[in-house]
Length: 143
Image 1 (cartoon, rainbow, N blue to C red):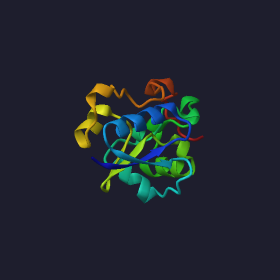
Image 2: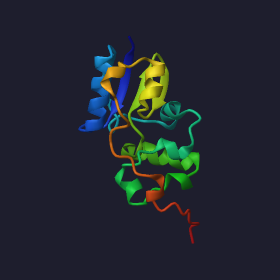
Image 3: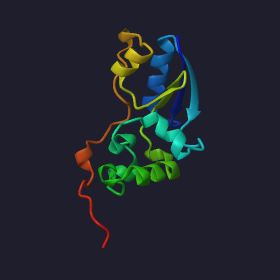
């Protein structure tokens, strides 16, 4: 099975469940603290690939839920600066296996990528994800 580097938010029950699913599926999981990792734009970009900027963000992050950060309104460079400055905004988990990096927990995609025990019913990303419509999606120009 695979050695999985798993960037998690400490205390996140969803991440804890995802780690247990990976371990029960036979993977070796190396857990790292998403919030204390010294992220750089280049290092973080590798997890997102060609995904749209809005998918880089944790929809349950306080700043997103309050509408302070509206991912749909951000250019890639501005979004990356926010994520590096405030890792709580980063969609999680971040996963790395044999140099390949991915963001978010999609059990179907993870199963196809590295394999999961299907009897474990791994569920979704864990933390309740807000509907992108929850935030004020109106992108306002600065006065």
